[in-house]
Image (cartoon, rainbow, N blue to C red):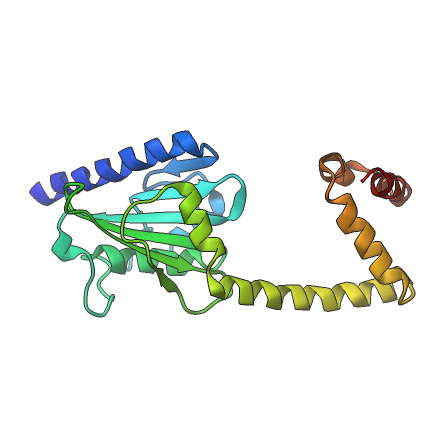
Length: 232
């Protein structure tokens, strides 16, 4: 019972920190143990520390402007329970537990995983990990304290594995786009880059971004595209 009470102290430190961080970056949703996001809930149902029931990280944070990014936080009262030697005891250790949860969530999301232990700010121990969807290995970030949300987004975006993965995805998509423009749109080789360039120019315009998906047919969309390119 004492251990449970002490762990609440760790959670309070984390809660207050991110409550303040949200004032500077309000575009986040902070949930505790349970989530209303059905995709996250489904993945956590299979991520149990004890092999039964669903996984319940202390905090689950989602980003409004980064839909594919989530943040998990696992807390332990005792700094001696921060991390096991082999990171294979998720029930007893904060690092082990958050790595287990993140490994399940990374099937559908990019995950920033925080392990936090200690009962005072002075003794607080923090480990930060980045899991990327479609990347088998996770990385430990050089962040040993609690940061603001902008810093966590920067850590995620500056991950070298993310650049490699994004380039690989882009190359696969480029090949598909090339074939579709040839086979379905019947565009010539000079016309393909012209269309792609026009779309990229149009996407510099906020009104185009907010309205193009509402066009009911190809003719309307084409007129909007040409008009926007002229305007930009």
